[in-house]
Length: 148
Image 1: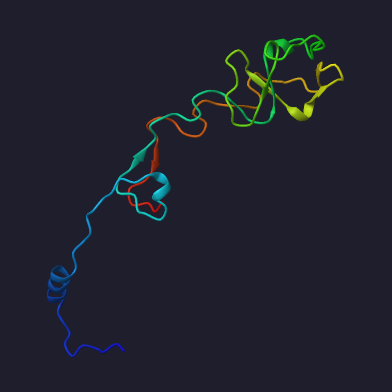
Image 2 (image 1 turned 90 degrees about the vertical axis):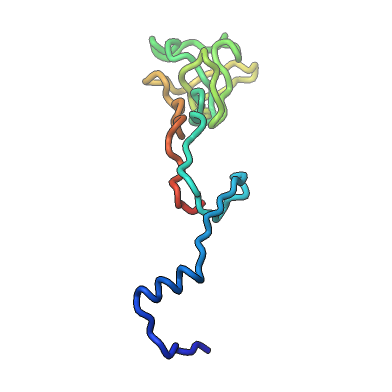
């Protein structure tokens, strides 16, 4: 049970009591991110890398060249995977020679494996995530004093 003290220290006396009896913790540790949950960040943290570092597919689909659609939907009956298109998965980098992604829901294959698309992209880069879309090198990502 708490007992009320029989004295009332002045402000200066209270500060002296606190100074004598309470020592601030100035210890810092370097931890793996997985072990830092709930800890307080001791310094500002800046991104070491740009993420993503390459254009990525914003959806599951096929990556294509936008220029192949400059005159509308092209005849895709002779298209070959790896040459005129590539499969693209959400969040995965697309090949450098492709610049646009068509959602897989807008792609069909016949019994012989020939591809057809029911969507004509309107803009170069549709469904493509930009380099640095999540974070850029040097960007502040965690503030000093923030609980992780």
